[in-house]
Every structure is written in C-alpha cells, then in structure tokens.
Length: 277
Length: 85
Image (cartoon, rainbow over all chains, first blue to last red; front, side, top):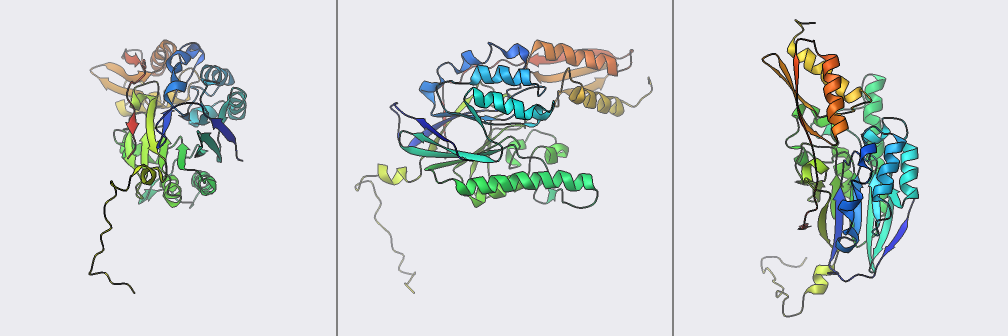
C-alpha cells in the first residue's frame, strides 16, 4: 500500500530532511496530557516524525487511543510501526485503526512517500522480529514452534525488502521496532540478542541501499550503529535517546552535487596506471 | 520456598513482571543480595513502579524484603539535532 502525504511551506536547508524519531513510548492511561506538550513545536523543527513501535505499555486499545490523541495531528507527517507491546492484548488492529484515525500512518509491511517541499521521502515500515544475527541466529528447523518463530522473522524481513524496493524517493528510510543490527544492542545482555532483532532486516536494508534506518525495542542499547553495507542506524528507544524525540538531518540524494559550485569541485584525477580497456 | 535458589526466584519474578497485566515490564533489573530483592531500572509511570513492587511481593518469599529502586523517567526536548553521515 502506498500513501501520499504532503508537507510544505517552510524555509529549511533543502539538502537535508529533518527526521524526528522516537520509539518505545509505552503510553498508559496516565500518559494523557503528558506527551503532547513535549511535541508542541515539532512542526517548526522537523519535516516528519517516526515512531519506532511500542506505542503502548499493555497493548490496550485505551492506551492506543491515548497515544493517538497525544501524538496525532501534530502538524507534521507522522509514521509509526507497532511493537511487541502493542500485540499483548490482541488489540493491535484496533490500535492501528485509532492511530490512523488520528493521522498517524501505521505501517505493517507497507511503505509511503512524503513530499517535503518537492523532496520525496520514502519510508518503509515493519515491526520486524527476533531471530538473532548472522552466525548466531535461529533457523527453520526442528519443532513447529521454532519453525514458526523463525518463519515470522523471515516473513517480516521479506515484507520490508519488498516495500523498500518500491521506494523511489530522494531519501529512503527503513522504520522497524526490532533491531536490524547488533551495534545498537551494546549494553543489552548478549543472551537476549535473538529476541531483540534479526540480521534479516539489515540484509533487506542493505539490499535496498537505504539512506537511514531507525528502530527501537532495545531499551538498554546504544543509539548509534551502522549496517554491514554502511547504512546509518539509530536506536531511538526513549530510554536510549533520553529525550522526547531526537531530530536527525538526513542528506537528500544528489543534493551534495547541486550544492557544489564549479570552483568548489576538485579537478578530476586520472590515474595513469589505469588504462582504458 | 525459603530455600529456593536465588536464580530461580529471579527467573520467576522476571517472568511475572513481563506477563502480569499490571506490569508487562520486560527489562527490570532484579538483584537479590543479603536478604533483599532490589528492583532497578526505568519505568514510565508511578503506577508501573507500584505495580512492579506489588508483583515482586507476591512472587517472592515473605522473608525477602523488596527494595524498590525503580525510577520514573522524565523526558525533555533536545535543542540540538544530529546530521546523519
């Protein structure tokens, strides 16, 4: 499914897109009135807001409603994925609906494009799942339960791969709840890595040559990481960024070339040792 | 129950904190030392902090004191942003 959102009318550096991101808000009934004041000036500071899952604490529809009303219609395109907590009470579909009703586009293996002053920003989002990382990961082998666990992870990574391949924007972002890499898990216990993410997500992100990837879930992890293919990854779990949200300025593809004047360009260097075929 | 090894007590409490609908907390740090069970880490609200302590008191033997060192996280707005390389 593709969505088209439009964002315009502000003055900003056109070579950068300002991506606000946060994950693991874990909204409860008591969160009403607590979140929205923190996002009051977001529309002036960011071009879009990404929410990396765990919108709710207990997965209750009532909590989803609180979150949606607190962070809905902030005046900035807002895109979310669900997290494991949002499934706890089997109200995930309803939580998603209430988010959508309040203007929070909630991606479950889907993608959208946002027009930011003529710059096309593509976001593909999926919850993702565990399974572990290359060299220490689960496989679809043995008991049906184990097969189901790993199959779910593979399925969601495949959804992400498909949706990433559909992105054609000037900026391409992957949004997940589970982590695609180990780097951002540093601080978590090694034993629980297989429950925190899957390298299959990273493989999809690298294959699509994304510009930026954002995840949550790893509360005790670290913010910064990079995929094997060199895609910057940020763990934006609220306990990690220790703030209401963080703003990341992401380069627009090709904008660097546009910015350079002829005087700034370095002369082309031809290595005489390399001859044309 | 009183002689139950500490690691099993910790394991049981960890399961309960994750699965109890009052808490659903997955990353509380539990340490049992010198006859006391320390609950440490961040929670989102005073309600969760109290609920975690209540679950711990229900799960642990009565002779084990529960020390609630969970703190409620508050978040501000960062002034600066990061330019992604």
